[in-house]
Structure formats: structure tokens, C-alpha cells
Image (cartoon, rainbow over all chains, first blue to last red):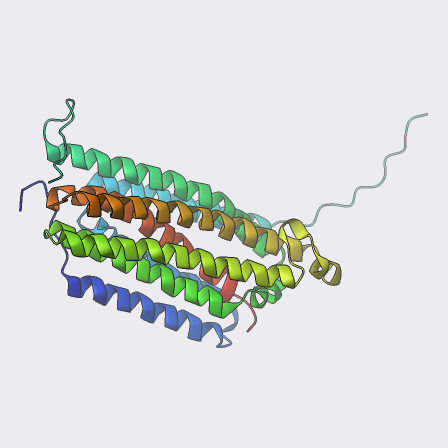
Length: 107
Length: 213
């Protein structure tokens, strides 16, 4: 194999990762029917983040990627987290608008 | 046999392939920001109308959503296998796995169309139109379903583009003799496909799981 061709992952590993992802899908589905109260949303998104990390690390080969490529991934993912968190916190911590007394119109 | 051509401004093929890969990742990061605007809207409105979003999620058919998740993961596995087989010189197997991944994309779109049909039957249309919203007059309902149609619709457009891209890559592999040196081209298509899969990995819990079941 020429030097410019990347190393390949074994078929067994690719299939194993696929089965792992399907197992996590099954786990997410089962947990969605269990009354977990306030934990249901963080768990659902947490499992999704784990699946994403597996796809990114193995299938998208971030695990072996050049630092410049990993930097792009980190910055992109970082922006998602920052924007989503700030939007949620903004709404959750807003006080209701003050009721101002009506202003009389000038004659 | 396909041989990549070295462009004049690169010192060697390794550097050229790195530039191709870097360019693809920058494009994917820009696509991620495209979706992030909608994810942010979802987070904002979910925080504003938590009870309605919780009630609305079960109106999306969980079995069809889960089927689509399984379909896309299967597609990602197929294309990951295809790239690795092509790197080892098994070009015919890689080509047919690429065809399978493109077919998976089409299957996803069929299931999505069935799902949209179910919503239209229930009087749920984009933009809060339909008799469903007359029966559910609170603000959160049209917001939830408009976000649902916008995000899954945008994602479906990306799946359609991905299916066409993989179909073209499969045709290229079947038409020409492509060896390990051509694997990086297939890898770029695979990167796009995995990105589309990761977006759906988050859309699935947001619209099908995080609600009252």
C-alpha cells in the first residue's frame, strides 16, 4: 500500500461499532419509557453525545486525525454548546417584564 | 486505474489529501453552525414552553423515528466499511457498499414522507396550519411543530444531497478501476454522510423521546 494511503480499520471493528451504536439506540428508546423525572432530558442528550463521539472518533477517524482537523471539530462543537446553553439559561433566568403605569398623552 | 493528480501548489500527494480533508471538515463545521441556529431556537422555545413540548413529543410516531435512526446508523456503517475496504484494494465490495449506503438514504426519505403524511392526516402542517392547532390553541404547539418540520425538513434535504453524492461515488467506482489511492475521495463523501447521521442522532431524542410516553 502506498504511503499516501491511510491505514484501514478492520471490518470487525467497523461492524462492532455499528452494533454498539444500535445498542445505545435501544437503550435510549427503553429509557424514554421509564419515568426519570428531571434526568430524562440530560440522559437522552448524554447518550446522543456518546453516540456522536463514537461516530466522530471511529467512523470519521477523529481519533487519528491531524490536530488541525480536531481543532475544527472542537471549535464547531464548542459553538453549539455555548449557543444552546446561553439561549436556555437566558430564558430560564428572565424576570417577568415590569408593569409600568400608563403614560398620559400630552394635550 | 484511477490515479489522483498532484496539483501544482502542493509539494506531495499527502499534503494535497490533508488539504482536501481539512476543507471538508471546515465545510462540515459551517453546516453544523447552520443547524446550530435551529438547535438554539429549540432550546429557547423548549425552555419557554416546557409542558407543551413535553406533551407534543408523543405526537411524533416513535417507531418511524427509531426506524430512521437504525436506517441511518446502518448507512454510516456501510459507508465506513466501504472506505476501509477500498483502502485495502477491495474495490468491488466497496462500490456495492456505497450503493447500499445511497439506498439507505432513499429509504430514510421514504419513511420521512410517510411520517409527514401521518401528520398531514392529523391536521398538522408547517407554520401552525391545520385543524390540530384549532384544537390546541396554546402558542407552544405551532412552535414545536414548525421547529419539527424546519429541522427534520432541512435534515431530509441534506440526506437527499448525501444520497445523490454517494450514488455518484458508487457510479464512479463501478465505472472506473479505483484502487486504494482513490479511497480519500470516497472518504470525503463518507464524512458528509456521517455528519448527516450525527445531526439525526440529536434530532431523534429531541423530537421523539424527550416527552411523555
